[in-house]
Image 1 (cartoon, rainbow, N blue to C red):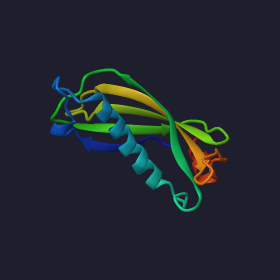
Image 2 (tube, helix red, strand yellow; image 1 turned 30 degrees about the horizontal axis):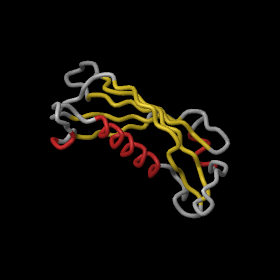
Image 3 (cartoon, rainbow, N blue to C red; image 1 turned 60 degrees about the vertical axis):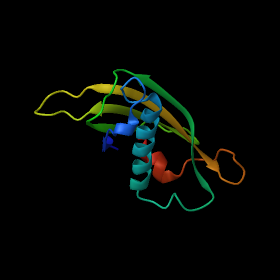
Image 4 (tube, helix red, strand yellow; image 1 turned 180 degrees about the vertical axis):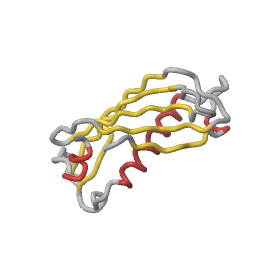
Length: 133
């Protein structure tokens, strides 16, 4: 699968007391991207008794981010395991006039597919497994 990306606007309320985007907001940007990506998967994975939970997120903050601006959040699925898949993210500026993007953060997120009633891992759905290849 090719890189999935969404554009978001940095909001005034995303800033912290130091005048830059709060670290916790980076998690929300990644969550928005992941949710849009999951909705784009051509299947009915949302129905039924199994689904994804976030098992791990690791963020590397590279540069402070400020309001106002538009950003791009990317997602690349990596090789899946039996019941999990790792997603690679990048949060970057939207280049203007052919310039280079500034990378504000990169991250990895591990999703584990679980039985919603038992809370135990189950094999990834085929439609999700195929995205990581």
